[in-house]
Image: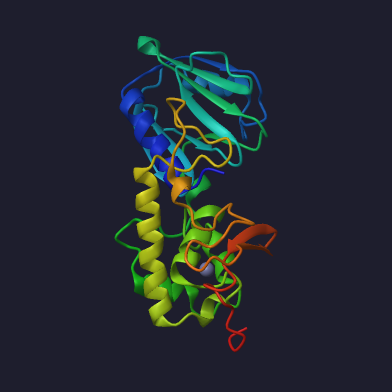
Length: 274
Ligand SMILES: [Zn+2]
């Protein structure tokens, strides 16, 4: 599933091609992604609008339109946004056409992706937590967010209302990098661990953006290329492989119904704190 580095990569690549472009046509082949709006109304309100800005909040992409409305897209599990694909894509849900001939194709194999068109973007992204790459996100802020929480740290990192944009892959990598077991109660981390986790989250996300995101599943960049961030993964999606640090076998544990990968030796669970 695309997380912050993947969505940031998509944002940057779409911005280079679509800023200032006007919608000249919208073809909807599947209305399931459209939330709270009919295909007919969606198309009517997009036609002729210019894209003034493209931004990201957590894992959401926001297209600011000249009409003062915002089109918001969440790719969920398998959504992708492709610019001028050479061949007809099998799982095409919507095709956006722009003046000048550029096309943007929204594809989605599993059909969990969501597309909104709203006047007030806060209706969709207003409850998101702090952006981990913003100046606002400091070790002190992270400490405040974790204080008193009994939920496993892995679950808290995935909670988009606490920190926005981190998903399963990068949470696993950040926890491995700091030697923290995913089931450690969030409120039990000490200040040294919190400082390390804060640094690891930022470093891992920045590095993954530099690699164009991670293509472990269906993720592709808008030009159709894959991202290479997963080549740096130490534990995420590495079940059964050996820990690069100690050679123990990477284990998998379910946390809130999601698979978490970790090294049982490098990330020991401190029995005193659970
Ligand atoms: Zn290890």
